[in-house]
Length: 175
Image 1 (cartoon, one colour):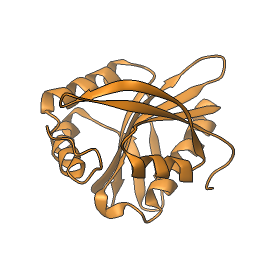
Image 2 (image 1 turned 60 degrees about the vertical axis):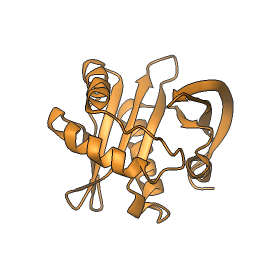
Image 3 (image 1 turned 135 degrees about the horizontal axis):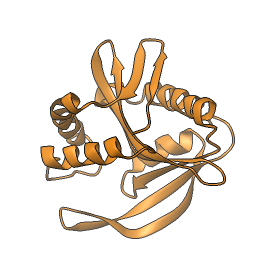
């Protein structure tokens, strides 16, 4: 578990705790109903708890809740890879449906990246996204990520295969 604690403006980004899982499951399923992927089957508690345990026992994974005014407004999940050059991989970056398209997600991403650079000397940043998540891909591109490669049929959700887009951060922030 990578310990993360970021406070800026009225937003706090911190580690998910075991007692957060039940509420997070409800929140994620509610948010998922507004996502482009149209995922039919909601996330089960056991599935989310398994993801929590994976992160909890790994020294390089992060699973973070984003809190604004004591309300959950987002989730970030991923890992650091300690190679010759330290990399971060974000596999989930979910912002509350009512907070989208207001620049809040970009602010959060910027603060998160600045923190990782300062605390862990991260040099490379990657994100993975389902190919049919067009708005999510636009978000990453707006924040200076470009498509690095596509892994065909990587995901299988509800019996439907989907490609995974791997994006890499280039240059500075905000295009």
